[in-house]
Image 1 (cartoon, helix red, strand yellow):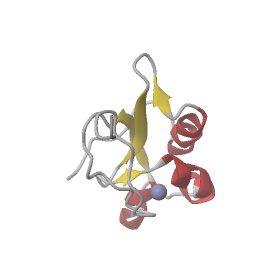
Image 2 (tube, rainbow, N blue to C red):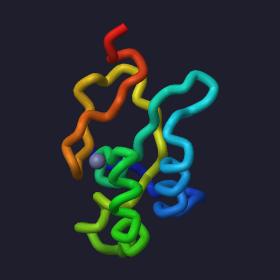
Image 3 (cartoon, rainbow, N blue to C red):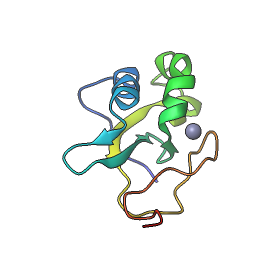
Image 4 (cartoon, rainbow, N blue to C red):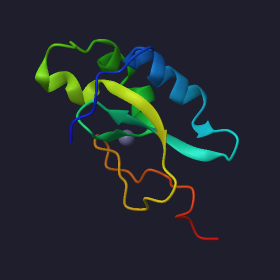
Length: 97
Ligand SMILES: [Zn+2]
């Protein structure tokens, strides 16, 4: 899956924003980072891998997995996992109620 080039904030700015605001308001939906290669990165990895995200080469194909396309909300994908640490990414409707 390919996504379009991001406009606006840089990857590291988006990573820092996600760490600061892991939930989207209004609604309180859990957010995660959608990467340029179509992968997903969890909040914890945005924090722990911040240096890697900040140092990506936009022209290097192998670095696309560390470039954040956008921050997005996980409403109901209960099978979504982080492509780096493989931990589940929290979904808004997937939890036990
Ligand atoms: Zn992760």
